[in-house]
Image (cartoon, rainbow, N blue to C red; front, top):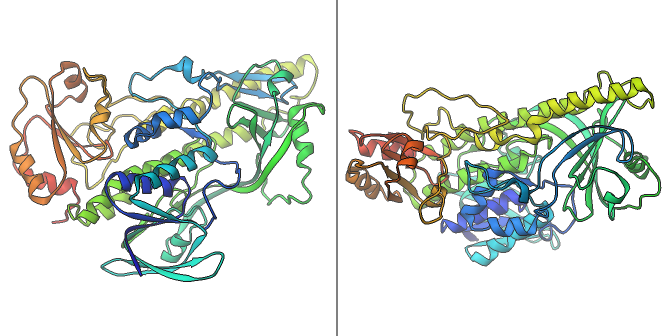
Length: 538
């Protein structure tokens, strides 16, 4: 029986990202994946990595590689609303290319497009290169049991049927919406079914030649029944994802005229295309009642599902990983208390509910069919109807295309690991982000004199910032951290502009870049503060 510190079930992007995060923390893991390899099939999967995810990639040292392997940086990300690619135009939501956007004022990274069939192998390669984790392909989980000391998992080789056992201190189910780990734990998965959809990966050489819109990322195809499909650029190089939006009944692929649907979307029959892969799927908004049980956790789609209308599913899953990674490090190395296991779900579940609910609102704006009965009429009345619908969709979907608040502004309100400072909770706008160093929020970015971001100070252990002209001595806090083995680095920053952003002389930042505590004086019980942020239950 082999022994691991963390066993990860599922080798998709969330499982691979967790293995990468743990590897950088010096924690051994084994990833178990039922497929024979990474991204062996070209599936219609996620492709948008928001600004916070790119900051996490920066912590992992892969941000530049992700940017280079993804969408061309000069490719517009506009969305066009139309009856067909070569049909009537309704409106347009502009979103400039990466080259035109530049970095946001509140962060060192920008949103990037990186298709999952390229992102996943990149993650897998980095994991194996680090040499701390292993990936066991063509292997499925047959069952597991846990006790106070660890988890014992029964694994089956898919090809031979041979069985092995693995003993791990902790286990994480990253095995998708149909999670066998969640089912075995008996954790309810409740929420809302939205529709049955079908996506196809198709190749269309030089589609730009056939329409007047220039290079765009997405076409939303609108008919009398509402938005019935969309065509989205996957790599900016001729690979597109075509999605049929919405059916109460599961679509029968055998009787579905997919080629006819694609021609309807294109609006003419002389545009050549090749269907590479077809995938039926269920759109839903579901949440696990708990994000773990005992020594077993859930992350990504195993814990929450999200409509892709907004691109928040994968990004939320990678946020799970960046929080869970440092907590597992603390549990494995002994400086973390048992409260870390309880805090994980308390912090991440509200974020999942928030992000998924916003995506569902976007979806409902897509499929609204009110006032669309004359949308195809080649008349003045039809033109007026299209103009009105285009204006309505542009307004309703602005939060989908501009949702930095969703990706950046989540907070861990009420977490047992966060020490409130008495300031009121700020507004939570989804369409823009307002940085704050209030406990429970992402520690703000500012450029340092040496060209680094303040965010580059974080990501490993805890960091205690000493800010301003004459910050107090923090020897008591440093000694308290040392007594329990909590990794803590004290960083002195005397730049007045940074002190103004953080608003306190002392700010304690967690390994996931979230502010845990701030104040102008060291607390009377420094050990109590350290024990709180490390999850020790007294």
